[in-house]
Image (cartoon, rainbow, N blue to C red):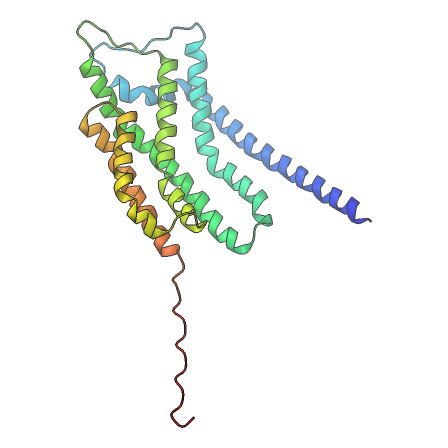
Length: 255
């Protein structure tokens, strides 16, 4: 067997393994989706609960397209299925990538993958339980007199997905900070010196993604700042300590 044919066979075997792991990942999402499909309307009701609970008595949501009442709950079921299957999907990706990594890369990559996934979940949960009640409460209370709030279910889904992505990515701040330090882009000292700018930036982000009231802005800005500080603490613990040089030997008085 020549070296070229051996390389081709190895490449083909990698492709086969990649296909197998992709089929497993997609299959897991599809199976969970089929299980959740009968509960699709219930899942959408849970998703819309933060808005429905803030609507006036008798308030409701609407569907402006003919097929929207059928397809929107299916999209929600697919989204929930992907989130449930995400650890298994990441495990398949890790199983394919890990054999090609060095030992120190494995020690660094696996904790980052796990922590980033958990932080993304936490960001979504924070948006749903902490931010949505304030946002929708503010919107319903500031609506002009005579205006009845009847949000389209598809537009609501799009808004919720965007908010989930925004807060999920925002909660990745500690992972980003640790990566910047581990890759040598920034030092822990530089990150601490940039603290004041990060605090200002956090309140700017809070003003962009939340209604213009101090409580909602603080609700996003404060966690962002705390997550930044947590990333600095983790990076400082992971950063190798500088070793002091050995002192030069003193000359013997008899020499």
